[in-house]
Image (cartoon, rainbow, N blue to C red; front, side, top):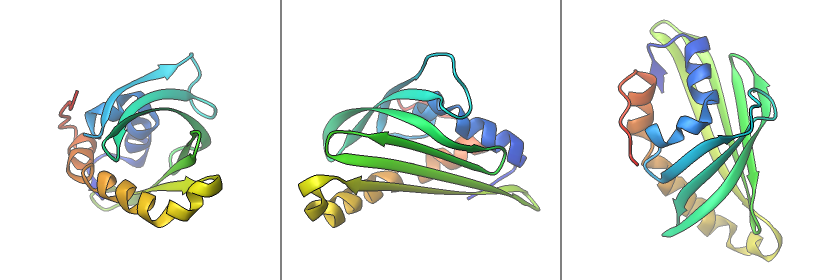
Length: 141
């Protein structure tokens, strides 16, 4: 995804994960937990996954400003990992966003199905995320 924002601006937008409701139509609510920013920052997210509302706490586990950001959450049966990389581009920057769901325990047997559901949900964010990185936010809450 290409954005007119500089890599520093795009990174700051994505690191402010409490704003995820502005670009992810699957997310119903989000807020920062505590005062920490950067590495170790925590965000409480309420999202819809597979038709169910799921509450998760995402933590920034990698914060390599302004190029790489990793957020992770562990739920009872799955681990979620979102990796964002940003590179300079002639038009501003180019961002890559990879979201993975990794089932735990016996849920690993359902891994391909869970990843397919997760990938389908992630596809819904492409347009809104592009608008967010262009400065044209649309709230979905």
